Amino acid sequence: MSLINLINKLFHNFHQNTKHQHLEGTSVRKDFISIIIASYRRKDLLQKTIESVRNNNIKLPFEIIVVDGGSDDGSIEWLIRQKDIITIVQHNRGEFNGKPIKRKSWGYFMNLCFKAAQGFYVLMLSDDCLLLPEAVNNAIERYIHLEGAGKKIGGIAFYFRNWPDEDRYYVQKTLGGKLMVNHGIFLKDALESVNYADEDRYIFYKADGDLCLKMWQAGYEIVDCQTSFIEHYYDPNEAVRRTNNAVLKQDRTAYKKKWEGIYHFKNKPNLKGKIYSEMQDKNHTAQKNWA
Image (cartoon, rainbow, N blue to C red; front, side, top):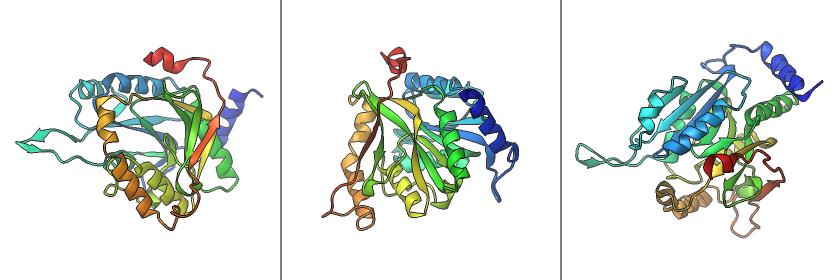
């Protein structure tokens, strides 16, 4: 049996009896994926991210949810013309009625998407990412195998690299050596059980690691998928990134303080790190899209 036929059989067997079923007390469909993206002033990058989703040969039905922070580069106008995208606009910068708009946190924006998601699986992407072939299907297949083995899975981390600075793909271990999801899939029930992302403690960074540690603490596992890959565009001089980087130290301090004595110990070895993959993208996806 070919790999494609095996994957098709796995999807059919797992979802045949759950098709259109909903989790008890929710509107979450078990045969459905929600793909969520937060964006601000990155129209060109966002369009390429969306196209990589559309072209990823995703075998399950899916929705795309984008929350935009009030872009003025044409992103909103483009988004509302896309009939396969649910667009949420939450202005996050500038002024209104002569008063400055208070900036909302990364957690606030992501929770708008997390809570709106109808899928059993919630794929979290950045607006500067490209999915490599079969990334989503491979991750769902991995979940199906682990779920069948009785594992309690909260998230599936995709391997990524910051292009063009980095050559190798990796996933990251955060405080306590716990695997985290930078880009990848969360299970909707796991998100709900830990009350989603922290909206108050962090401005932009570390809320994703915090979300994963809450899942670990609640008894869920975060696992990697060694056949799911993402290209992440990284330009340290980009205006949006410079603004975000300005709060990194503050967010890092808050992160360590929260998990002190649980997953972070001042006088013990730092277990954070990276798990690398030696995969080479023969399609040169990043170069073709961004070079």
